[in-house]
Image (cartoon, rainbow, N blue to C red; front, side):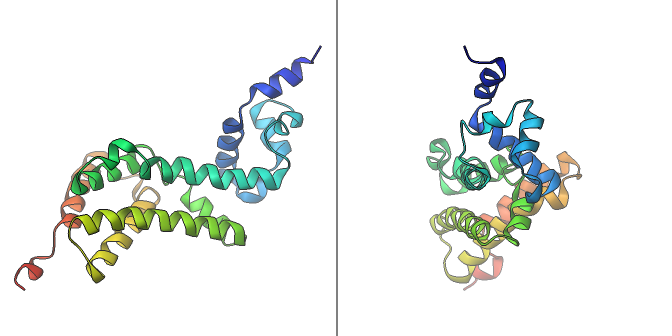
Length: 195
């Protein structure tokens, strides 16, 4: 008969370990993401960890994959979003990034990337995914050259850091500014129309 502790350990899902690891990464930094600390926070034993991961390094690799999937691919691969016209897809992406807090762990990941080449490469890959997603939208909207690149980078950068920089702002104002930002992104500057 298995002990109650073992049953409880098996009851903690892989995703629960990963979510708690992300929360710990955000609050205490990557050095604090330790097996024993996670087990304590989850109210389980260390043995439960080994149902899902080989070791701490395996956890950290899964953590990077989980972050990329749950905070980037979830938007990029969303079939409902993909079906929308480009201008609506852009607005939907803006809303989803904000509502689902898809950039919540970006600051922590970027800090971790400064100390670890593997993490740096993972962050770079996610940034490329985000840029490619926005670039595709702006191509469909008719932008090319520097106009395309500027919009893609600006969209990716702004929405990656909006929550960090403006999190305490008035929500009503944020919604008004989001609409204005959307309008700015999808329209050519007036000067271009005269060419």
